[in-house]
Structure formats: C-alpha cells, structure tokens
Length: 363
Ligand SMILES: Cc1ncc(COP(=O)(O)O)c(C=O)c1O
Image (cartoon, rainbow, N blue to C red; front, side, top):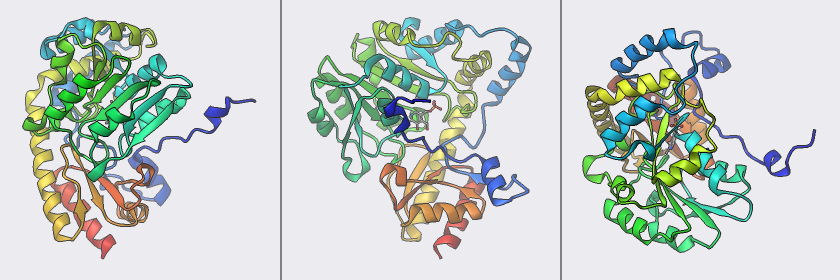
C-alpha cells in the first residue's frame, strides 16, 4: 500500500489514558479506586437531568438522529441570543476543528496558534498539509500582539484557546476584543472556549457580541464534554456568522451527532444546579491544589479552567510513578513542557488522593 507521504509522517495524538487500559497494563484488579485526572472531565458526572433524558431516548435508537438538531439548535440559539442558523454541532468540538481544517486549510496556507496551546489545532493543520506557526507564550499565556504580528497573506486560521488547555491561562476580555477588531478579513479567529462554564465570571469575554454584530471571521467553539460532563457522548458546538456556518455544514456528515447526545445536551442546558455545583467544586479544588502544591514548593500556573499545570520536574517519570499509585495524570512533554504534569480538578476526596500520591512520588 502507498500512503500519502504527509499522512505517514503524522504523529498520533496521545489522549488521557482510560482507566481500564491502565488497569490492564499495570495488573490492577480493582478499578474502583483508580483516580483519573487526565482529561479534564467533570468528576461529578453528567447532570442527573441529562441521564434521565438519555434513558428516555433509548427506545428511539433504531432511528437516525435529526441531522439538523432542530430542537437543540433552537434552545441553544435562544440561550445565546443568536439565530439557529448561526449554530453548528459536532461530535465534540474536536470535530468542528476538523471541519475548519477541511474548509480553510491546504498546502501553502498556515494556521497560527500559541506554542503551548491545544494540540489538536496543529494535528488538524497537518492533516490538510498546512503549516502551523507557533507563537511563543510568555508566562504560558497567549501573546495576542505576537499572534497578530505572525499573520501572513497565507494565514487562514488563528486559534485562541481561552482558558488555554493545558496551561489554564486566560486572555483579558478587553485584549480579545481589540484582537478581534484588528484581525484582517482574510483570517478567521477560532476562539475555543471549551472551559467557558467554569471560568471566573469577571474573566469571561463576550465573543458572541462580535458574532451578533455580524462579524464574519470569528467562530466560537464550546463543548458539552467538560463542565456538562458529557465527554463520552461527543457533542460540541460552533457559533458564527450564518455564511460561515453554511460552509462548515458542507463538510459535516449528515448524522454526526447522535439522538442521545442531542437529548442529553438539551437537558443539560436546563440543569443550572449541576453547572453551579461543578463550578463550586472546581473553584474550591483549585484553591486546595494551589495551597497544597505551594506548601510542597511546587510552581503552578494560575488557572481559569478545571485543571492545573504543575511543575514537578521530570513530568513523564512523575506521571508514571503516579500511575503505579492508581492516579492517572497527564504528562506535558508533548506540549514542550517536559517538567510539567497537568491535573484535572476532581472531588475533594480525589484531590486529597492525588496530593497524597504526589507527596509519595516526590518524596
Ligand atoms: C481546548 C479544548 N478544545 C476542544 C476540546 C475537545 O473537546 P471535545 O471534542 O470533547 O468537545 C478539548 C478537550 O480536551 C479542549 O481542551
């Protein structure tokens, strides 16, 4: 067989390791006490209302889903104060990033991203033979001026992950407004707000106001995988000008989002209590980690998301030693941060287990 050369050169994304896989590899018989803090999932689980909606949808599983997600689109559009034709759903926001690559990237074009930002951006760029321009991130934060300065006539997409995965840093709302206003017309700004629901209120930018005002080259990405606790169902959404949504819709497979995912997302949007509890868990968990890690003499990066980046030294070794103690964290060498690990904020009990394991590992 003869593969396309650029495909055979691609690296495979290393996701957070599933609990069962680690248990098989390390011979753990009991998986109940394994703590996974590797993928920024919601340790409270899905909203009880979403679980009920999923149960109710089971008897309809012989039918294809509504590819247009009519009811969910309508509900979300009302919530966000945009029109339904400004929304597109994907099998997770990852799929929406692939749509963006499909529509905008090819050989000779480039995508601009922060050097320590979400890996999927450059993996998708590579998938379409586009170049990735990585802009350094001083103090692990996006340098919006640097990103604007990096734009060339071949630039098609600039991605801003806010808060940034894996560093947790945020851009200031005013700086983001200015960035959007100064962006040249030939470039689309992709604002990835995967962790929006758990961000501190005063740090939340209003990207939607630009989209409502008719800005054509801004797209907002959000997901039900994080605060909403539905990562296993695979559903995320994009909000943009209707013209941009129409173009992206052309590369979407007709049934990319399942009936169950649509039902769960509808219910999750109504479950305000679940989101409030999630935010409280994340806020108090972040404070706990900051205190404990500082007391251990470890450097952390202030985070606006449901995870924290910690400088432990020898990140991959620490990750492996934690794994032997039934804690699955995330090594950060793929992000050029070999001395760091990333830890998802869990329940208070899980957080205590992680800190105890880390104390053992680091002596
Ligand atoms: C910044 C960011 N964007 C997008 C995603 C993709 O999430 P999903 O495809 O589950 O919606 C993630 C998941 O880790 C993320 O951290």
